[in-house]
Each structure stands twice: as C-alpha cells, then as structure tokens.
Figure (cartoon, rainbow, N blue to C red):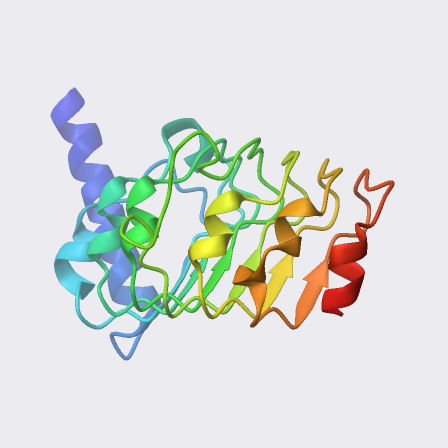
Length: 195
C-alpha cells in the first residue's frame, strides 16, 4: 500500500520536526537514517531555522538534497557531512545568509566547476567557512573567487594538485587554508608572496 508508506514517512518527519527543533532555529538530525528531506522542513521553518545538521545520513546521497533547501531564508550553518553526496543543489549558491557550509566526507568530484560563475550567480556574501575535506575534488573550486568573505577553506584529503587559482587577488579574506593530504607538488611564487 503506497499510501500507507507515505503516511508513515510523513508522520516520521512530523515527529522529527516536533522533537528535534530547538526554539524554531536549530535542527540536528545526525544519524537518523533519513532517506529524503521532507518539504515540511522549509514549509514550517522557512524564516526561523538558522542551523541544520543532516550529517551521517548516507541514504541522502542516493536521492540528493533538494533545490528547495535554499528556501530556508535564515539558515546560517548547514552540515551535510558523510551523506554520500555526489552533488549538491545549485540553489545553495543563492543562500545569502549562509555563513558555514560543511560537506566533508562525501563523494564530490566537483563543486560547480562545470559551470561559469560570477557575482550574479554566486550570492554567498555571508559565507566565511567551507569544509570540503575528504572528497574527491581535483581542484580548488573556481566559484570560491566569488565568495568575498571566505576566511576558512578546508580541503584536506582531496586530489588537488594546483594552487594557481589562489594566486588571484580574490582571496584577500582567506585566513585559514587546509590542503593537507592532497597531490600538490609545487607552490607558485605568486602564492608565497601572498602569505
């Protein structure tokens, strides 16, 4: 009975939202064996949720994170650690209030690298922290040039081999750069001068 299954899943999200939301602003659903993200999340907490942790829900990688996640207009911190994700929704690039994005231990091979970006397509002016540790990225994402307040970039244990993109003057606010465990064999002189 498909209707019974959907009703059970809907009820499950009702319970999750009722029991795990703290003061309408924080939701920690780490390790809850989630198989999808319910629209009830942004319908109910569109303007109030500031922290969302969906980490350690490996099944989410099969269905992905819906584009509607960007409907969470007050969201400041998003944790999607160890979710088996191979991609993330493009709508995340429009989340103007997002300050921290944690995507470590997923299966990302690119971070919107196949698209052209500029200040009009990337609206992450509040983003100061991004963690991409433990993915399969072969380069530092070009779109990060359009994140003006990025202070911390963590890309430990990826497949990055070049620092050339960091030699551009777009990374003036960068204070912490973690690229340990990558395939970097050469440090450009222009990068050294930036230090």
